[in-house]
Image 1: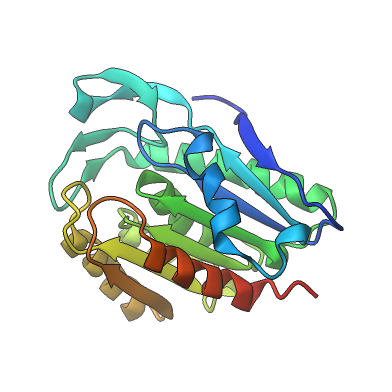
Image 2: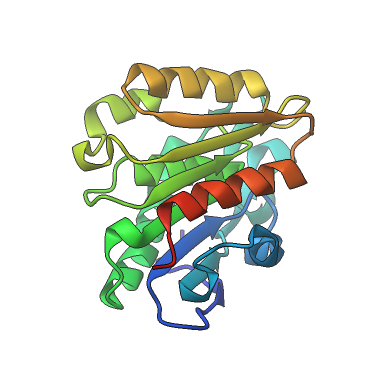
Length: 224
């Protein structure tokens, strides 16, 4: 596993006040969600630093061991999603480095938001709910959380009330919505308040979801 991630970045056009770290899905790269920035129409867009990291290249078991960008290995594409828990923690460490890098620039943790799609969404949830300082929010798209049991003892109390957005496709053939709903229910049981949306789409993002994401981010980053 790499010790540092390469990134695609869109710097703020005005004073740097906020940062969004957005993690891609399996087999994609940092460019995957780069184009979403202009579609969000964010109030504080000029003040936001967007960071799109590239996941490490590693063999993925369900893809016959083929090497590709992946935040962790997936052993079986079942509803339970047999995944490499150790790999999730390794990716968490890499994302924490990115959070710290933004803090070193003077951006407080509460002005840093984690977002991710599919694998990236899992890592965003896993990292954000454990992070020892209060973050701005978490966006988890077309994903689930495989580390709920670990979260019960490892969660960060300061992020107990962190704003969380979960969006999922009703006809997703890759990450079944049942997995996402189970994670949503488990997190609710642990006391997390989550904004849930589902859409008539597959394993993707749709215009309606982008609009909801925009509203969510604007409610956290006011642009003032």
